[in-house]
Length: 236
Image 1 (cartoon, rainbow, N blue to C red):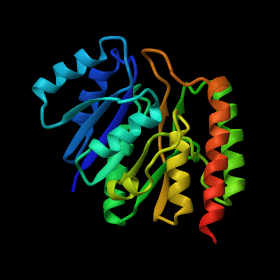
Image 2 (cartoon, one colour):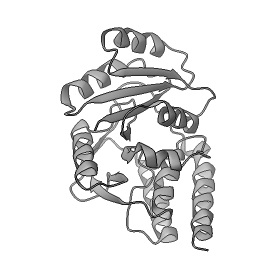
Image 3 (cartoon, helix red, strand yellow):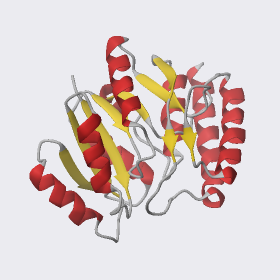
């Protein structure tokens, strides 16, 4: 049993190396990292390829066939080789210790997915932008009501899944960050076995965030409506 870590990226040359060595130092299982480059125009590809030469068994590098985070995640799912898949962002916001816990729990309890929440009492969150936090809490509350579910961090990217289950969720319809809402809602609607645990999150220290509330708001609501309608259809 082993773990594929999908890391979609765009212009993350300042973060790739430190993230890779942090994972390599702290992860406790056999792993591969699938970097999926979403049309970067900096030196991201050179950084990855240089790392890959010395770490061939631990790094895969793919260029996204069409622009968009949803497409990058789709590519990572199809190209990954191992039994479990975790999705992490390249800005080092996710805690590797939580990744180890994900892996141990999904194996031990034979789950299809584990959802991490940054908003449980024991979670640790640092440098979360206020405007983004307000949008996050309001939107996640709306999702919980529509799906009659108590989970409180659907939009968080950092989760783990069985690969065989993720493949059954394809095709991905979301084009951007809303892909991270689509996947857990499909897990819930299709009655796969999952649990949620508290996780930590740290605001990025290098580079610029690609998340834009004004541009993404309508996309999140489209995905929410799409998944809610799918849930209704599955009941009949």
